[in-house]
Image (cartoon, rainbow, N blue to C red; front, side):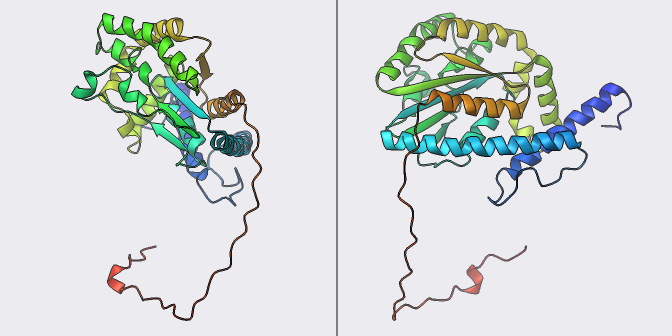
Length: 306
């Protein structure tokens, strides 16, 4: 891309740079725990933007601390939690899932991101392949897309018949009510972005070699069928929003605000309490007279290139 000339091009370049800074922040979130949020400089951003970044990190770390408390309560009480994430492509579902799971125990929290169904799965009861991923007591499962594929991509792309779709809409409320009666709490999120924001995020992915894998042919086709997806979403809300498992809409044009708002709301949906823990005491290491450490052969050692 050539140097920007018009105000529109300059604004686009500024937004792309800001998006790259967001990616930089994403890596900082995974850094060592003595990292002071926002202290690592990012070139080319204003002091106001730097302050926003600092506040974002501060709020995120606070919310992640609460997520750990929620996790401990869920384990202690044997609670079962399902969180459904839906939304248009590039709406930010993966980003918030990463922040929720980032500091939690992978033995407690799982992400279910199912691929396209096999021929065998297509012949099964529609919900069958999702049921196997539901949580046991003391577990949390996050569905990165879910059984609502039928109301979205399958409907828009013509992968299901009208009869299949109607049966889905009739079955979903009963299916979810059955799960709730069995003790599974369901929280459903729709990440909402504007037409212009999706176009911008797709453009960023086409320009970034490290993000191009995120764009499939199906994703590109979904861009063309924006209006069809809107109608599908509206029908889905009308038919599947019910008291046992209502939909919650996250305004997601601003990725960082969306992450914080979603996590804070999720915490409000689980009536957890802090579980007291016995202080951990590190035991003294035993020393035995007959202990002998065998040297590792040099050919087995990974070269220290760094």
